[in-house]
Length: 272
Image (cartoon, rainbow, N blue to C red; front, side, top):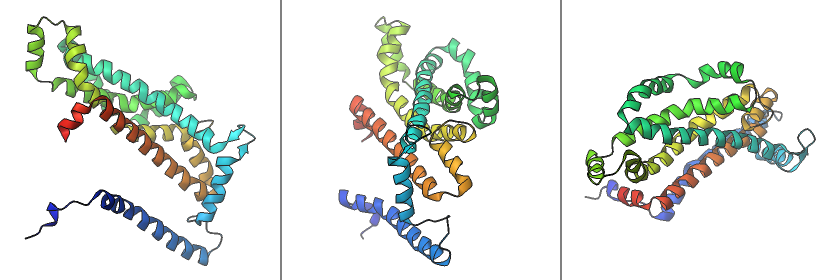
């Protein structure tokens, strides 16, 4: 008896199957949009694709007098700068604190309860506190990203360090390795792939905090622009911006995955 669970699509088949839901969504949007526009030509909720093209030509290619460059790239730079700073600081904290807390019992006893507590506080709940303490500038936005993802990343690395087989640590000590040498030679090579995975898993949350901070106060940014034009029901700008954020997130995730595969091929061979 043939069972479908024993068959897998070819490379081309996977590509077609992956594109199918997107094609269905686009076709459904066109059908519903045409119907709404036929009933109300001034409908702004589901504009025609021609409206998307016109709006994006305006913000992508035309220089805005207020900022001296196209708004689209101005907003993209602001958001990526905030995201990069927040994620970079969080990754550095996860690496340093994760190794120390996971590997050294005294440090774990002192810091683990605090890190666990911080990871349970809703980051958006402290956003007003950050604005009061650090002002409305870039610092508070970056700290929000760090507060939102760093504690979770630290705990992830701590668990990864603690999962290293004890036999490896004992063998290293038998060979005369110091604590620092064990961290460099035993711990770091095994946790670096997981750190990249942790960054990948945190990108979605990081984008959420970037957009949330920009929606409240900012001089520019993708989230700032989305919430600025929503008062005009400018879906021809909002939807392309949302799609662009999704594309940026996909590209960043893909780049990190490629980095992991190239830098640590042994991990992916083991998984395969």
